[in-house]
Image (cartoon, rainbow, N blue to C red; front, side, top):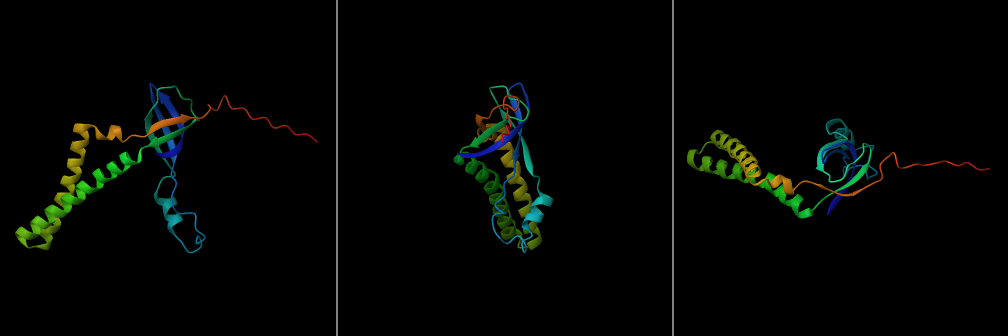
Length: 156
């Protein structure tokens, strides 16, 4: 199970809207001076992702929740979304190259094949509701912010 912590932004009728921080693989090495990837990541990608998650129990704003998704569901979704359009691109481009022997027509076939692959993915997802099984679920919840009280006691 792949897990991450998220912060509740809102909760309404069993649907929680949460912000999940983006964790990049970059940032752990000592080559920050010569590497431009962190600057690109900060300027091009958002620092958090907002998503909707089903929740049986009411949640408060600011509460931390642990989200999880099974590895096989994540890999299945990645294969489904990437392999079908790639296969369409390769098959239709190869077919157009074989039939017409023109690079431009082959390029057009690649565009048509990948677009058809993405359309097929959308159609299959709508027909079989595959994306519902690939949604993250709430594994555990933290205390609501109003129940957590921290007192500082200074003694000399």
